[in-house]
Image 1 (cartoon, rainbow, N blue to C red):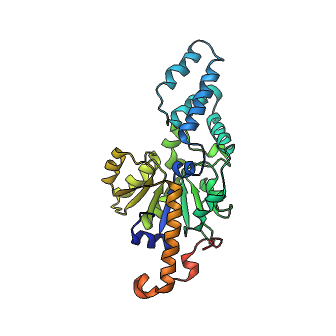
Image 2 (cartoon, rainbow, N blue to C red):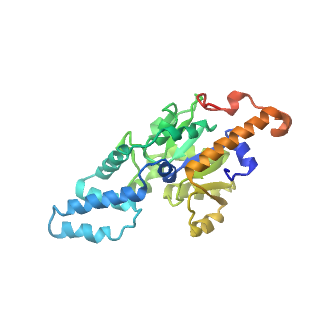
Length: 296
């Protein structure tokens, strides 16, 4: 079961949901986790520091002890200290591109009627889920009016296709609204008009928190649904005050269950369309299905 209320299933089926995919989505399909990336960066920093003497060698030992297991931004900055600007971005991009992922199960995402997907992931799993038949935006100049029926993928934090685009260190996060104003405002606009379904995302990203904070200040009251494998109780308590509800589920299992729920919903609409849609009207197939290559 997808554990979503019927009215949310209806919203998704009518393309009135915005899916926001985080690292938990990628990890569910076999991509390397953030913790593992951080571990590889730690190893590389320690190895590099042995080639230096005195304070520069000691600096790595002192600083690295301050970073948590998932502090990718801090570790990236320390990596750049030894290797130069953007070195960490190139290292992470190369690391993600070497992971072999079974592509067959990814297609379930392309079955869903989604006009826009937002992700903070750098990898190309979502592109592969759609056989690359979607419009990808990770620079502001990629943002244009959506004139095709293809799903648009907004890669909020950049893509391995251009490692310099990655939002990785703290200055990248701090300057995000200034360096990506179009992407920021497009995501904000979608959040205003659609139900956010957040899958495999830790809810600690400062850019996402800024978006929610800005919208809540404008009396935005839309419920946010978050799907996590193991929600943190403190996070549940904190975000619950901001209209966020949590579903405990693995991203892969959730999407498979959701796809089946959408199939059943559409089947019921074909049997009795007048009772399934407000006003007794049934939308045209082209309106309900934004992805022409879906197979249901």
